[in-house]
Length: 294
Image 1 (spheres, one colour):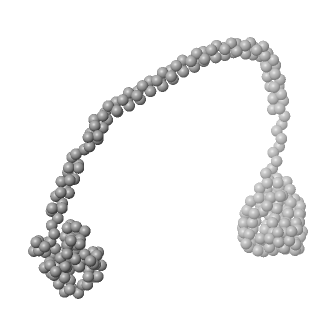
Image 2 (image 1 turned 90 degrees about the vertical axis):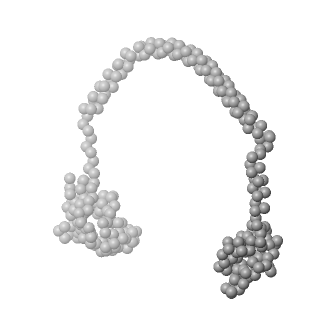
Image 3 (image 1 turned 180 degrees about the vertical axis):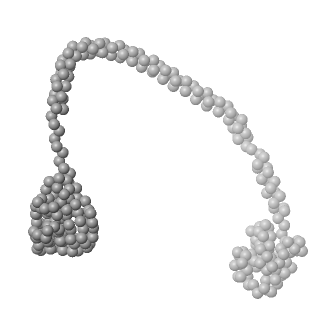
């Protein structure tokens, strides 16, 4: 065992650190740690790794690595002789270039010039081809223009012959349009409007823009429906089975009140328009429909 190895081992044992613990701390294999304590540096991957492992070992046991290197410099392997040849070989590799590479570098500008000349020649040839094609197109366009002028003259002659007939037809069309304008416009049909005035358990709707008032009751589910006018006269009041429909004409009335026992299961249509409940959860519900006649 070397003196340096003995010094490191003694410091390790004073701190009660086993080789397994030291391996976990330094991440260095146990056999290399044992080699350091025995002074067997030949088993290391190299002198550089030997110095690095010694430094990590010393720091793990709280010893100054630089002081140890100085005190035991006769034992610690030096890396100077390994580094110098490697550095010299790198410098030599960087300075020397293969002859083929140097020749290629000298020849590179000439190749670039030849490629440029070739590109210019191809571009000039394409331009000449386009120019000759345009000249041929111009000649064809000139021939087409001359033929078009001749055809246009023929069309003018035919047009002049048909202008008189066109004037007669235009006069007849104007007379017809005047007769159509003189006829009175047809009256527009009134547009029905069903608006909500109040909502809740006693909702109010207003019907306007219609010359009739028909109420259709559709039972989507079993329901009870009662209908009376604003003066209290009863028109209907009974249970309607599921799937049945009743229709009543209230054109003569200005106001009716519909009491629906099952709102979700009952649809009301006024002149074919479905009444949209403002509150379709409250049941039973009184629905007043005010009819404003035109």
